[in-house]
Structure formats: structure tokens, C-alpha cells
Length: 112
Length: 171
Image (cartoon, rainbow over all chains, first blue to last red; front, top):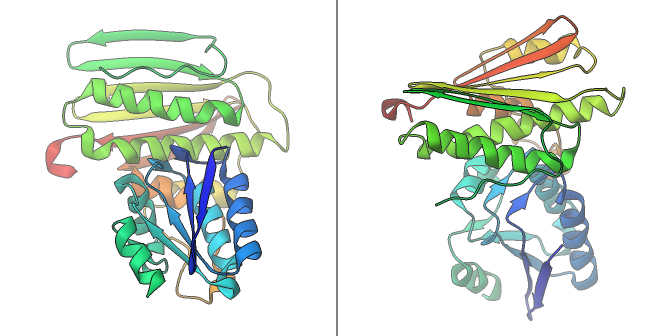
């Protein structure tokens, strides 16, 4: 899988280069975020600009990440596609997750 | 021009028929998770071909089909199944219906009843973070995405019927 990340002073930006977050890629996605969190112990910003579709397996992986990083800086999302946002909304996880419309807003919040 | 995705393996049977404002297409796939994404994309394309009003419903149609196939293939891991999963996609303006059948073991009563209930009961998120569920969302997402859903067991097959109203006023 094409999972890229960039390390900044106060956050790690994780950019999954995948169009679909589904049962095939969910386990690797989850492990990658958790590994980053354990390695750097700062907020993980997940830039979902490439992800156009997410199913419940992907949602489960995202929730697993969210739970796993609580004690090491937390999690924030940006550039969430409408299809993915719809799943967050239907499941009410949009009330739980920190979601920003764009990367700059999200990054500024973490750097503040 | 959109391209039709290729399946991991060639569907062993497919029939196509268009009759004016109606469409009927059959797809058959293996019990293989790797085929789910392409079937989801294919059904999305069929939806686009069916109705120019489909755009607002496309993610919901794809999501419901993908979630149902996830469930069917997960069930088949306990007791391996011979044969194929069959999907029959039918559009009769304005209804897009996907009937999915498989020869896997009969699903248990609790799950079967859940498919039959109209109310959508998403897991609660008003709980502590450590207790947030990482699974159990699939059936409720299917019910959220469909206008109607039914399940029945007949002649050794599980038969699911997902219906979507593509008329502009409902989306």
C-alpha cells in the first residue's frame, strides 16, 4: 500500500494513497497509523484527500486508530470526501472525530 | 466516459438486457473479498447507466452492496461454500433493485430479523472512547443506504433484496 507520512514538530501527517478504505486495506491502514503514533507520540493528522470510498471495515479501522492514539497525541482528519463524510455522519462518528475541511486549517490547529 | 472495472476473475455468467426504461443485469462472483470493490464499482456504473437522476444515490448504492457482500463472504469463512454469489441488478424507473443470492449457510435468526426491521439502530457513540465499537456497523449502514431491504431463505439460498428509489424528489 502507498502510505506516506511527513513528520512535523507537533504532528505527523499521514496520507494514505488509496482510493478505497475497505476490508482489503483496513488492517494495514490501522497498523500503520498505530505504529506512527507509538513511534512519535504526537497528533496524527490523516489527510483523506485520496480516499473516495469507505465501508464499515474502513470505519472500524479508523475507530481502532482513534482509540489507540488517545494517550499519544490524538487524531484529526482533513480533506474528507463527501462519500466518506456520509459514513461518518450516518454512524454519528462525525460528532466524535476532529474533522477539518482542508489541510491548512487542520495543520494550523495542530501547530497552535 | 467512465470505464467498467475488471473483476479479479471473470464472472462465470452475465446476461444483459435493456428494454426502454428498464434494465436487467446478472453478475456472478466468487466468494472472494478481493472482488467486492470491483462489484461495488460495477453496480455504481449500472446505476449511472440506469438513471440520470442517480448521482446523489451512488455512494449509498455502492455502500449497501459492498457491505452485504462483506457479510456474505465473512459468513462463508466458517463453512466454505461451493458456487458463486449471484447479483441481479434491475432498474424499472425509478426503482433500482439489487437481488443478491448465495448458497452459504442460513444466517442466524438474530441477523435475519435485523435485516427485516425497518428501524435503524446504529451503535451508540455516547460512550467512553475505549468502548466505541469497531464492528457491527455493516447491517445498519445497509439499512441506512437502502429504501427497502428484505431477506429470505429459499431452496438452500439466502436471498437479499435491496431497493433504491432514484427519483429526484427522494434523494
